[in-house]
Length: 470
Image 1 (cartoon, rainbow, N blue to C red):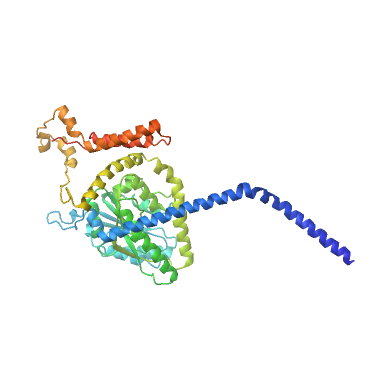
Image 2 (cartoon, rainbow, N blue to C red):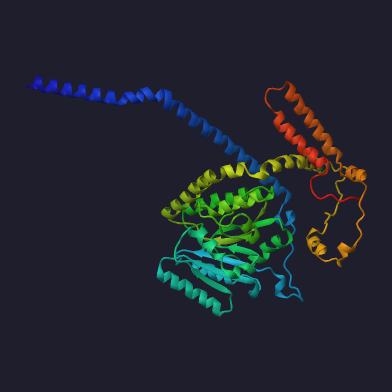
């Protein structure tokens, strides 16, 4: 009897082993030709990405060091003058500003953000505060509406706006808010999430950047965290976000490169927002989406590290996990949607070759500054041609501009005055390099070299910018 049981167990073991062998056969057959090469590819991709991230960190660290040593500030890079009261114009000398506060069941913090917005130091007839309440909790809605009525009774121009749906979430609320008729009189829009509390001088420190620099589309302020010491998790978040602002955002701003809008604690020029196509709800990172599109339109961004807006970090792991999911998933989804648009943007190729031409002049100027030779202390006032007045001047024949006689230079003298010999010389050198590669090379470098040579010739022949004869 015992021998029979032993044979049965052995038979079952053999059968089980054979079944497992049969199931494992596809894995044995496929792991070497498929799985192993795929894993090697993924490891190599990760290594390349790690090197890229390391170089990115080193680059940002070096740039940040120079920013610190040279004491560079946004106020030095761009013209900035404090807003002043005009005796004749009064408050109308201040631009009209819209302040948007999107909310969703913000029971704990709605009073802080609304109160801070209403305390902003700005002429009361030149500011509109717009509370965009998407709350689904009726009790919270009533409290927010009551808070708005309280401030309206104090003379504040505050609007309480609601929707009958939550389409597009935050992006949808901001987009709907801009459709109201009273927004048409506004030049700029400041955006604060419900837990953000700007200082009273926020507008007086940000708006001057727009007033004196028409190319600026966004001014982004830094975040400071009221509950950073709540727990270890909030402390780690503070460290990570401080690096993002102090290094990543500031390096992008100081090098006149791209950096993302953080979704709050920033001011947009409404014209820039409109030209970029407005708010879109195709991803969960509507702020980055808008920033990328505005950059492709040629708008400049400024990050001001000295302006700090208090807010609250998520202190529960659940809230932090959802936030990080949105911040990681959204950019990946946006990259998928916009990669082709970025690569094929009509400005990109021209921008690259033109920047290479200007790099020659910047390098030359840098060397002059370091060696203190030649024109090191030369101050040339940037020439203005009064282009903004030309349409008005041409409309009326009695204007001084239109009545002034225009002396046309001779054709040959005009062509000769256009020529810039340094650019032509460098363009000729690059062209000869490209021609040599075309004749003897095998790497097709001539394609890029010819394109770059053409850009130098275009600049050298005076076809960039407005030509003004002597």
